[in-house]
Image (cartoon, rainbow, N blue to C red; front, side):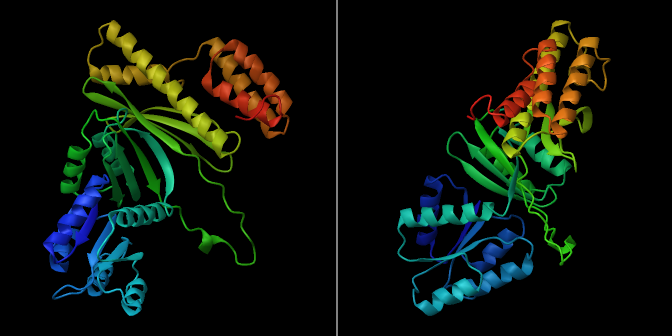
Amino acid sequence: MILTVDDEPAILMGLSAVLENAGFEVRTATGPAEALKLLATAEPELIISDVMMPDMDGFAFKAAVDASWPNRHTPFLFLSSMTDAEYVIRGLDAGAWDYLSKPLLSSVLIAKVRNVLAQRSRFMVPSFQGELAELPLPQLLDFTMLKEITGELELEGGSGARSVVPLHNGKVAEQDRAALERRFPEGIPGRFVLRIPPPDWSQLVPRQRTAAAPGPKPMGKLSGVRLGERLLSIQTEVAGHPRPQVVTIVVHNGRVMLKRAIPAVGDTAAMELQILAQHRQIEEELRGKVAALAGRGGDGATTSATSAAAGAGEDTVAMQSDDEAFRRDLEAGFERYRAGDLAGAIAVWEEADRRKPGDRILATNLQTLRIKLGQIPAT
């Protein structure tokens, strides 16, 4: 949501029309007092404010916002017909990201808004992505609240609608949530990206030593499998140190029904392939179990959810001997990989592939190592 503040109604109408035509959600205020009341219940991703207004000018308004909500860091664009260098410098010194001059060109306004929002997003690390058709917005917001996530949630609808939702410990104002659910109704095609700011480790690094910069964290995956009116939430990401793992958990009604983990291999791109492969594999397993239970006339969605998740996880079902041998080969291959014996790892994993043809995770691992050894070209 973008908040525009100006004491001239015609300017507000013009700004709203241009921004809404570009796919942005816009709210307006006819002055700083009205804007401050609105900001007490909602957090925009950007504020566009006039400079010359009665009672409180734009610079004082910016100072009031910073004093009232010091942890928000909401970007400001100042808008004014005062283009003297003195005013421009004063605006930038006040912490504005840019300064716009009246009269405005629509194309310049949109370009500057998109540039500011893109720069703002660079401070956040993309952590999870997914499709709104697979994980509808209400369940997605419930997930952020359950995990108490602080960051931002970017939403894009198939109709061109776009919103960036700031999150503080997973909380979104009720009226903002209602507006978002109207803007991105269930069943609408679209996608989401959940961004979380990286921690600042600089205070933990001894000054006499130089710490190696960590590589980018692979993008995780979120989705859901429907069971009538209920939803199984599936989350896959890389976790663990010093040996990272690709971890998938399946949650139903706040309970973890399944947890599966395998060692993560390769660079960020290779890990993201592993994430996608494991995530899709578990989705398919759950859908298969749900279909099988439905065919046998299961005794309700909750029982089906429990049975489906339990039936898909090795932690809750005794593995067959072939599965045990496959898992042993898979782990043996990882041990050889960690020892630097890539050819040996491939040999073991090829044996595992004969035991369980078509396993996506195994196919991803084999492809990664074959590329490393030059057996196949990188795509």
